[in-house]
Length: 265
Image (cartoon, rainbow, N blue to C red; front, top):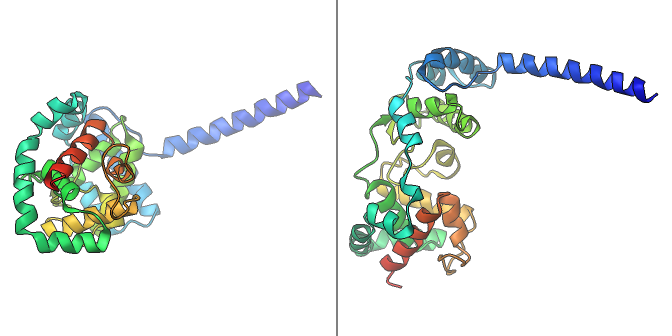
């Protein structure tokens, strides 16, 4: 009886393995260089069509290219390994704080409106704005779709970027983005550098417009647990929302510190 069960189990496992191999054979395969990218696009496009992605987005995908600069940047993110003091110095925290205090005053009505609606004070929003794009001056000049498609194809983190790619294709089908949209190395767009899934979930209007980007960032933070009036330093209730924005510990602490300084605390 035991032996019969083992034989049956072995047969079932063999069938399952064949079925799995069949699925994998039909799925777009990741790669570690440009050589397989065009073939991967063909396979991925077929999967995307089957999931309802429209012709406009598929056409844009097929015109995307392997983004070597994106891969180089993805492999070279050394600043997140710095100490907090080194990271803040490298990112120009003193300049961000000084400019941020000025912007808080000159755009007081905007920040008051955002705080009333989302409960997020100016400091952390301004710190994120300064950290992400130098207050809109450094939004990136990479082809957004090529960057994300390359990272979805790359074997390092294909699951995360496949989700981002589907979101980008949906936004292209809607007309929110296009195949020529420019962004940063990992496909981030706008004044506060939103990834496509976050554009879908929290975006409010054209994110190249500062007011829209700041409202969208506050919307994201509120959706991730921000509570009006609560603190946002490490160990305080709202720090978790900052953690949701960026996974790097030095980044999170830098935003909290610069936000507090901008808010005059």
